[in-house]
Length: 254
Ligand code: NDP
Image (cartoon, rainbow, N blue to C red; front, side, top):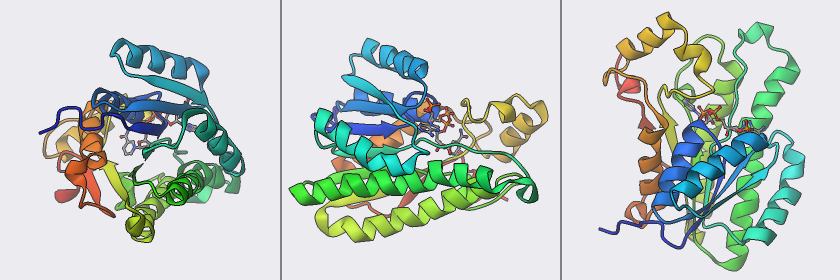
């Protein structure tokens, strides 16, 4: 078994400056890949780079707002010119607006769809097109959600974006398999991060998650990182178009 499973690879990780994305950046970096993270907040980017550097991970950050999806192609070309073609693309940036469906405005709906879904489509197609032109293999991951499969109140835009992404995993996988580009999804269960702070600080909700999850706890970003390393490595060389649920058994139980 190789230990540095991603040695010599370069990984672009959107949303790599905090939460699940940071957990993935750490795991992928410790597995030998160089890492470029993308986020809007420069302070968070700097903090993440400091932490990753302390672990001897070769890393950089770029500030960019992915909700501006029409600007993604020129941004992507700029970073590709600066850092080279990325072997690995991990789409983790994501957002939500928690509101009952009938109370959401069109702009709120679009802001979630633009960030989670459209920007993922645009950046991933740009990335794949570069690999295809150079005849290079690649691996892409998309971070999905339990809401790709099920709903709970106040998740209409988020759930619509995440279930569409689950389908996009399959569409990308079958479009690009012949170019040796693999695409898979990871669906985390309830993970303690900035995004879920309003949920885990709500005692009743936090206890419901624990009681509803067969493994009896909230997840943490370090639960996701090793799964990302596996899917990006040659150990998963015959896996594409698939989604792994890292949810403590949540979806398996009623
Ligand atoms: P965090 O809030 O910790 O991370 C979100 C990340 O996305 C940050 O790095 C943030 O950086 C980045 N981001 C958000 N909007 C944009 C944008 N417009 N442009 C660029 N970057 C952006 O939350 P999580 O770690 O929980 O979320 C990461 C992913 O995991 C999301 O896709 C989420 O849907 C998914 N997920 C989370 C679950 C959980 O329980 N936590 C469960 C299932 C899925 P910055 O603020 O600097 O822009």
